[in-house]
Length: 134
Length: 134
Length: 134
Length: 134
Image 1 (cartoon, one colour):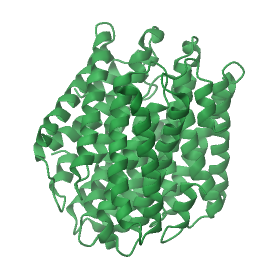
Image 2 (cartoon, chains in turn cyan, blue, green, yellow):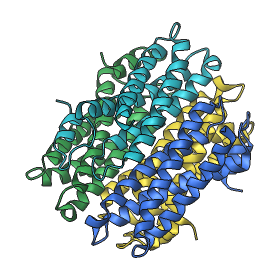
Image 3 (tube, each protein chain N blue to C red):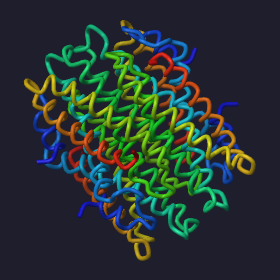
C-alpha cells in the first residue's frame, strides 16, 4: 500500500469522491508534475533546444497545474465541489495540451514519449473524476 | 516600477495579452497566494479554529491555484491560449469561492476581511484577462 | 519502471549524482510532499484539531520544502552542486522536524504514523545524497 | 499598507521575529520567485538560448525555493525556529547562486539585470532575518 492510499484510508472524515478514482488521480497528478519538470529540463539539455521551446514551456505550465491539483485532491476536510471541479478541469486541459506537444517530439526524444504517457494518464484520471460532477 | 513590470517589459518576445491587465493579474495572483497562505495560518491560530476549518481549507486550495496561475502568467515564451485560459478559469473560480468563505468570517476575523479583499481583487483581475478569450 | 526512472535514464545529459540514490530521493520528496499535505488536512479534520496545530503547521512547511527539493532534483541540466546541496540540507531538516512532531501523535492518529514514516524515509534519502557533498 | 503587512498585523498570535524584517523578507521571497520564473522564461525566448541554459536552470530552482520560503515565512502559528532557519538558509544560498549567474548576463540581457536585483534583495532579506538565529 502506498503512503497516498494509507493517508486516504486513515483520514477521519474520508472522501466525498470514489476512493479508488481519487487515489489514482492524486498519484497521477504528482507523477505527472515530476515527469513534466524532468521533461522540461531534459529538453533544455538537448542540442536542438530552440526546436523544443514550446515543449519546455508547456511542461513547466503543466507541472505547476498538476502540483496544485494534486495538493487539492489530497485534502478531504471541508471538501468543496466547486473548488475541486475547477482544479480538475484545468488539470485535464493542461495535461491534454502538454501531451499533444510532447507527442510531437516523441519520435526523436524518448523523454518526451515518457512524459506524454504521464500526461495522458493524468488527463484520463482527471476526466474520470470529473464524471462525478456532471 | 516593480520587478514584475520590468520583467514583462524586458522580455524578448513580449506578451500576447494586454500588458497592463496581464501585469495586474500576475501581481494579484502572487499577492492573493500570500494572503491565502497567511489567512489559513491565522485561522489555524484562532481559538475558534473548529469554526473556521472550511476557511482554512479553501484558503490553502486557493493559494495553490494562485501560485500556479501566477507562474503561468509570468511566462510569455511560446504562449498557449488554451493553457492560459484553463489556468485563469480555475483561478477566477478558486478566488470567488475562497472570497465567499472569507467574507463569512470577515466580521469577527480581520485577517479574513483582508484576505477576501485580496481574493476579490484576483478574481476580478482574472475575469478581466479572460475577456480577451471570448 | 516508474516514469521518474524513465525520465532520469532518457535525459540527454544524465545526472552528476548516483542514479539510484537520486531516483530514490526524487520519489521520496514527492511522496513526502503528498503525505504531509494529506496529514495536515487529516489533522484539520480531527476533533482535537486544537491539539494538533503544530503538526498541521509543520506538515504544511515540510510539504512546501519537499516539493521544491523534488523539483530541483528532477533537473539534471547545468547541475549546480551548491544549489542542490542547499535544497537537500533544508529538506533533510524539514523532514526530521516534521517526523519528530508526527511521531508524537502517531499513537492516536494513524495518519500521523504514516506521515512520520514518509518523512523519515525522505530525511534518510536526502541524507544519503548529501554524503556525496562532503 | 500591503495585504502582506495587514495579514501579519491581524494575526491572532503574531510573529516571533521582527515584524518589519519578516514582512520585508516575505515580500522579497514572492517577488523574487516571480522574477526568477519570468527570467527563466525570458532567457528561453532569447536567440542565444543555448548560452543561457545555466541561467534558466538556476532561475527555476531559485523560484521554487523562494516560493517555499515565502509560504513558510507567511505562517506564524506554532512557529518552529529550526524549520524557519532551514528554509532561510536554503533561500539565501539559492538567491546568491542565482544572482551570481544572472549578473553574468546582465550586460546583454536586461531581464537578467532586473532578476539579479530581485535575487540580491531576497538574499539580503533572508540574511538579515537569519541574524536573529545566531
